[in-house]
Image (cartoon, rainbow, N blue to C red; front, top):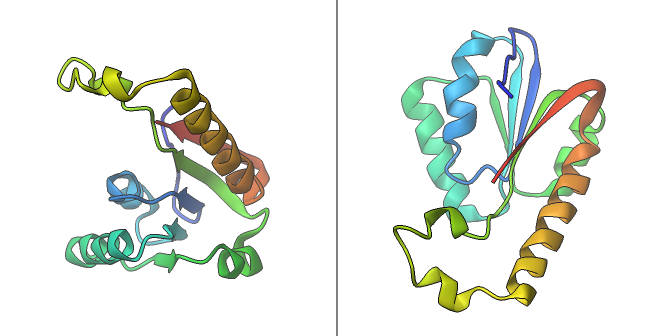
Length: 135
């Protein structure tokens, strides 16, 4: 699915990570609307803020605490982007040692984590909004 947001939309990047995703679509908003970035890891959030500042994107809000985001964004987002932690198996060709760590328990742990993240993120989506799920 293509993130086809338009000026005025509200976009939540839940699990911001390095946040190349939101940065890549920020130009579609034309500095109208808002990007909400949720990333609980302080180090990652610092990198995200620097990237948006360097790119000149000013219509972004940063949240590392879900409670703060709850007060502002519940049920309002036109777009919710979830880049959930993956199993890493997509890099198996480049990193064959991954298969040594891989087990059914490891897989189930990742699946459970991905499910919890999506369930949390969905509460921010407007009833006519779109979810974009990435791993």
